[in-house]
Length: 465
Image 1: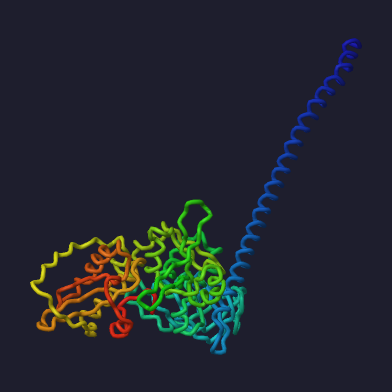
Image 2: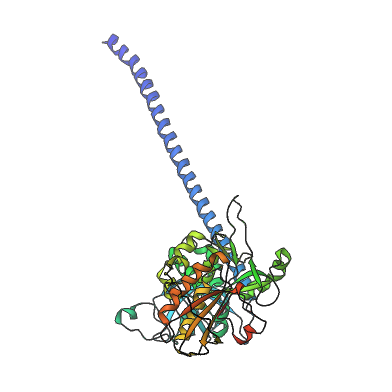
């Protein structure tokens, strides 16, 4: 018994030592795994916080950039009515109970100062401007205040001169849409100077990936009258020629981009620099269709809006190609505003006249078909970069007053004359009722004296003189 008992006591410590050693290793593995998990968790937290901080810094940088650009734009529109200027991009509509029944509440970042009770403009889409009244202002804490300056706000707007809805479904839609621009510029100044596009460009960095914002931005561009830097040379009014500036891309072999200012104020601000750089001391006014006609020709690869800031907006040719095929573009400029939509119409061969006739030259008679013809000619000339000027006059045979014809005298390159004549005939023919004959003559083949333009004003003149 003692023998067996002794052996049993000797075996116990050995078993315990083996078990303790195994348990210690397993625990070390578990603790090490937990430590690695904790370190990984902390690393992910630190990475996430770094990403959030980077995002916050990017947002802050975008806001700073937008504020600086906005201050630059506002400085070009000094107040003349005692009120400080402001504009605001509508970020969203707020669906809550307004102070005044029927009002609409919108939110956004205010650039400049606004006061309660001010009458302001709403610029949006392709619509004409609408005027409303600011009935209430709320700050970021939704407290009612009497005025605000350079901060996030909610503005409660009256119905103003918005039209009544034509259907129950229309009533459900917001009168003031997202990405509209609110401003207190006087109606005439706001419409003529075009603050909507530069105001939207100030906020471009915050919304550059938003497709709805970009669509509204292009709508604003289509309603803008641009100023193109140009160098005009030549003698009298009939011999002047115009050359446009170009921005050469960094890529070798690329075509230049056409610089375009979103308003005369921006062009005037940089006129001295443009004159010093290349003699571009003149500015040619163009609508969006005219801009597209030049920026998409064989010499250009698009345009750059406000090339000297505060925000530079590049529109490559591919983007402009898409824009001219949109419903919005055709709503504003018609189907025949671009050269691509014109199909040359065959011209009838002129029959030889048995004898020379003497004709009197006359201006078009105001009203009726001549007004429509002049409008069609102006639109056509504006959409073709190679056309400088167009005269439209009427000739009447001295011996036969019933022998009448419209004559278009076209100032354009010789190689483009036939194509432009065919295009002009296509847009003029539908309006010809009382006079059925139409002729075309190249400007450089005619002999005009200096008084001709005074007696017969240009129907279309890209040079504006």
